[in-house]
Amino acid sequence: MQVFELASQHKKNDKQKCRTEGFIHAGKALSVISHNEVAAIEQAHFDIFGETIDDRRSRKASLKEAIARSKT
Image 1 (spheres, rainbow, N blue to C red):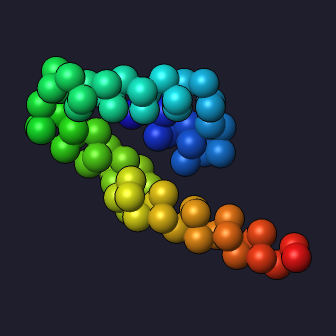
Image 2 (image 1 turned 90 degrees about the horizontal axis):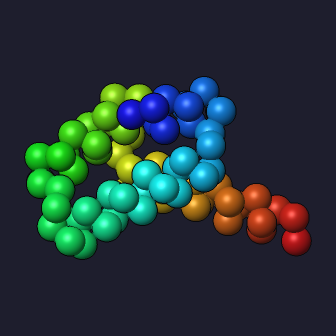
């Protein structure tokens, strides 16, 4: 949850974010984290950002594309 809180305050730590995402992906791939634990992580993200992880990722990608198009 700390990773999400820091990001919401524009104090993100890319190293910590990548590690956290890596642990989550590894846990899913190895089936060592449960569906409930994944749901808790996703809920924490939603509570802090007001949108799902996928929605936020998509919105940010769209913004980056729009910025790139405006520069050309």
